[in-house]
Amino acid sequence: MSTGAGRLDLPGTPIFDGDTSRRGLRMNKLFMSLRDAANRERFLADEAAYCQEFGLTAEQQQAVLARDWQAMIDLGGSIFYVYKLAMMDGRSMQYLGGVFTGMGEDDFLAAMRAGGRRDG
Amino acid sequence: MAEVIWGLATSHVPSIGAAMDRGKTDDPNWKALFDGYAPARAWLAEHQPDVAIVVYNDHANGIDLDFIPTFGLGTAERYEVADEGFGRRPVPDVLGHPELSFHLVESLVDEGFDLTVFQELAVDHGFTVPLSVWTPDPGDAWPCPVIPLLVNVIQYPQPTAARCYALGQALGRAIRSYPDDLTVGVLGTGGMSHQLAGTRAGFINPDFDHMWMESIETDPARLAALSREELIRQAGSEGIELIMWLIMRGAMHDQVTKVHSDYFVPASNTAAGIALFDNTPPAG
Image (tube, rainbow over all chains, first blue to last red; front, side, top):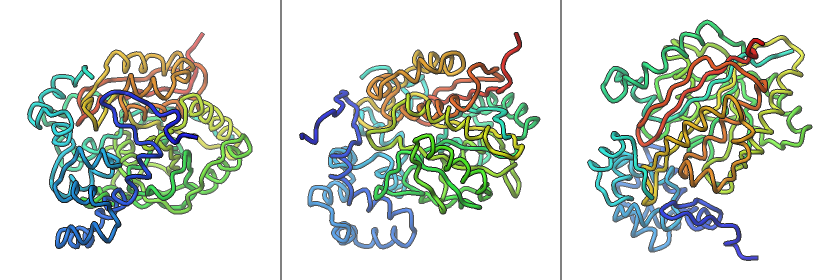
């Protein structure tokens, strides 16, 4: 049976399904570990080594090191987990919204304050 | 017997808690939302239950992706407030009610809802923000013991809206079959329309939200009939959290009396709703 059976296809809407979760598990576990202050220190001291310790793929490691938020989502990141890295960097969910939409943080924030986006 | 005396639906956006914790509730971006809470808070202060049940989802704080229970229930005597990576919220830990919890587990399992049982669980903003919406100044303790009922809304497939409504109905029966006289408040948390990732991030659908707000009172079965795909299409990928409102609503009578409702855009990236229902059926 295809693991893609029953998958939702909603344009512009990442679905965190079983395939995605399996692909992103190690990366998401790394993000989860960042709740702990000692882990944040270890991560920041040598990000590549920390990624290797968690068994990230080369692509995932590159996405994390480059703070390529879209790539992290594409490579199996759950937004709730990815956000833990963003918080550590002092980034807001509005900042991420600006990245994902290509609008930039200020325009994204302005759109939210105007009542949110209707398109897509 | 125990009885549900009220149901409260409310969003659980982390920044609502942060605005309260940092004294920003009168800031221009927040004042309307908190003003909108005031009538519900005033009514709730006059209708304190003996126990509350909070239907919520964890956000990678109490549980990881190692285990993903579709439904779970806390049976602990105390639930620690989680540190989500930026220090724990300055709110009290939550005292539980193990006796009622175990009764609910037994009743719900007997009805075919095979819940995961949590004897230890750190609760995150999904749980504490609704408590703060209800009780802004708890002091050293929340007003009563609180039981967590967890729902997976993060990883597909989430439980269907119909299953959540049915769970709520079974929860109502389970509460009513508890031998001690207890009054119970039920909170259904999360939503309304929002999406955090993808090019559709920032999506808000006020038409759908207003339909939901109306129907949760008068016609919850209509909402329970919505498919998972339709919910994500209409409310956004995180708007699917609204299924947790149906568990609250299912635990109440078919007819309820609305005490107060309000709707705000945005609270952070989210459309935020509050709806409070008295479980005393309307007269006549």
